[in-house]
Length: 97
Image (cartoon, rainbow, N blue to C red; front, top):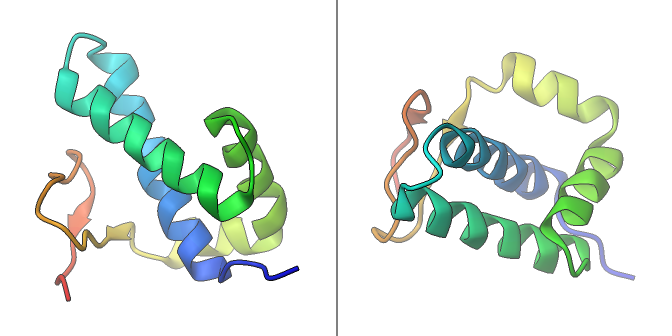
C-alpha cells in the first residue's frame, strides 16, 4: 500500500483544522464552509477514508509524534496551489508555486 508523504498530510491536516475553526466561529460564512469541506475531501483522499472526521483522526494517528513537531516548529505556513481559496486568518502566507 502506498502511503502519502507525512509533510503533505500534516499540511492538509493543518488547513483542515484552520478552516474548521473558522467554520465553527462563523457557520453562515459560505466560503469558510466550502473550504472546510474541500480540505476535508482532500484528507479523505489522502487517508483513504469516506468521512472527513475519520480522515482527520487517521491523519493524526499516521503523523503520531511528527504532528507535535510539525505544529511546534513548522511555523504554521500554508501553501495554496490554486487561487480559489483564500487563507484563513491567522495562517502565515507562503509563496505559491
